[in-house]
Image (cartoon, rainbow, N blue to C red; front, side):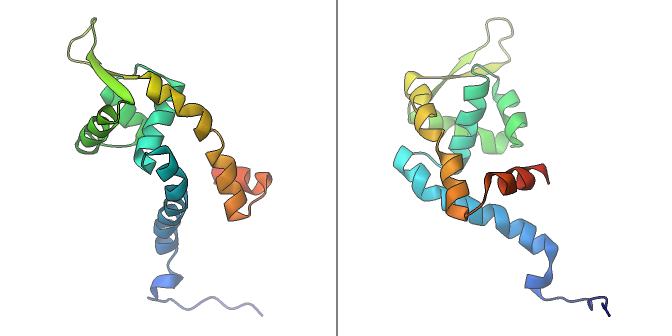
Length: 136
């Protein structure tokens, strides 16, 4: 007969801790691969968003990544210092700051394409398991 598990205050028994720990563990697995490209995980996410839609506003990029302006500002500055992006005021609305990829930023797209597959392989997941995980 199945019994209802007793309430527990053990950290490892908490679903919230598992959900908190999982992204940190995956991000740590990406680190060596991203180190080879000379970028961090948040920088990679920003570049991926710009590969999809180059020339978006800083606010639009922050919204796409779920980051606030306090986080976006240093991220944008670091990408600019690495010569991966440039910032320009919109000619239509000078309140908007647009972010554009440089040639160096665009050049990282091809080597980045294999990172997701490398992660699937490293985690020992099948493509179907990866698709299921993304759908959750």
